[in-house]
Length: 468
Image (tube, rainbow, N blue to C red; front, side, top):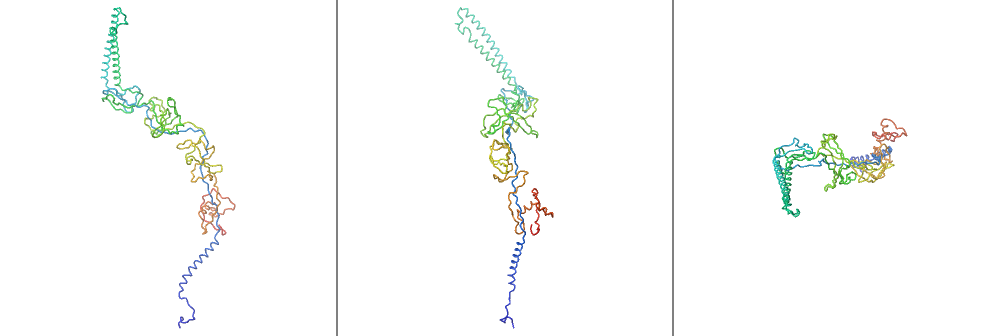
């Protein structure tokens, strides 16, 4: 008999694989929950570490008022005090030139540069002298005739006062005197033209450029050469309006007085060469384009040609130089580096309690390196030089040599999975006791940690007695 035909027989599950698919995942989940609960129950207690919050480390400058001599920087090019273009006043052929009639040639005052053919002007001078001799002879004749006329008038028995001027030949005498003066003028004019056939240096000069040479024919007005004076040179120095108050400048019209000292410098032959001079005057106007003032410094004998005892190196016309003007002295001024100023006129100070203070100061002037302060700081103040990302009044600061203060005692436990959090790892890394553990040593109870040893290698936690 078939079992399935018996109604009283027990029912047998005909699909056992389906039950397995349901029970196995449920079992796995239950086992995982039990394991997690056991791990949480027997997990080690979190090790407590102190988070060290470091105050910013800053550099400071302790200031003190002192007398300051300001230095004003400028620049410019050396220029001659006088530059002349020589022009011919006569016509003719150039018969001779000086051996020094070349660019860069030096001529003393009165020395001849070149000579124009003088023959025609020598002839003109002889003719003028001949006319003068004739005029003088005519004058002598008229003087004699006048004397004869006076004698003849006196023979008439009448008074000389009533004699007509024609009878005494006074107009003829006056004409003869005028002819003599005209002849003398002609002689003088001819002599001047003859003298101008020689081109003479009007001052101690150096030839800048020549336009003619021997054999060339020139006319009246022809340019011959360009010269410049070498007794002294000048340099125009632009000065800002706010810097004029710190420079000693001779008053307008006050010649002969020396102003502030000026140090000029330029690179010559790969080396820096300096010259000392002084300010002689101000141009007295403001440049309409740049809005700056110009002062003029004088350089005596720039080429060293006039005095053999010159100790400074020659400085050529056209040389670009940098100028450092020694200004006036001012008392009770504090100089700090430019980087110490925050914003327009604010600086950071370190108080006695190592707290940050913000202070506004009055800036007198500044240069490329320093800022000069007239008020707002006192002697002994400590100015912060370090740039702070976030500056808040009252924040703690740390100076070089100060210990690292602990400002926050907040404690962060380890994560539940037994791994240390980021902040805990940093604290463990800075804990010197971990270094002892890594060497197999145990730190002595109550032993003070060495706060200077902050760069220990991170070591894993070691279970001891069920706790870290």
